Length: 179
Image 1 (cartoon, one colour):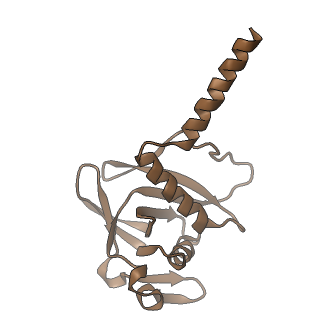
Image 2 (image 1 turned 30 degrees about the horizontal axis):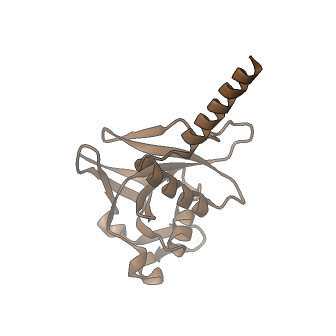
Image 3 (image 1 turned 180 degrees about the horizontal axis):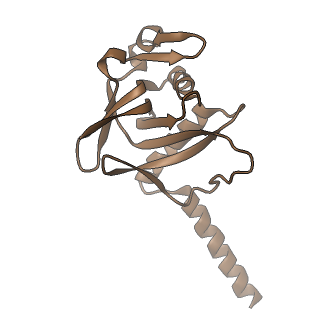
């Protein structure tokens, strides 16, 4: 099974990150910043995704637009020619989905990360995050941290759960002391 999704696929610290979001939210600009920081572009605008096993999705760019990226105000650029062969990659597995969305004042955003969010693509549940976008936020750094955190979670370490457990244990100890 396969499908094409509107988004950007990048490799960040060995993790395949699928950036999704409305047109104009900053997916391509964020991808260019990540490439400048040493990460690799797989696909911009259209990501062909295929299921290669019961738990694995792999993404690539359609041949016609492979290694090209569109930047508003500049136009189409060839990432491979501008940044070199090391800045691109033909395929990558999809390890994490990041939904970029415009920041909405007053909306509650997840600040702890104790609840795992998943997105279903081709009957495979992929870890996902919602990241609000507003001027001044460094999305490239946030995505780098998200990639490293996802890697740690796959290896069994979850900082949010660890802190939550510590807080709960502290609360129980205080209740016992007050009893």
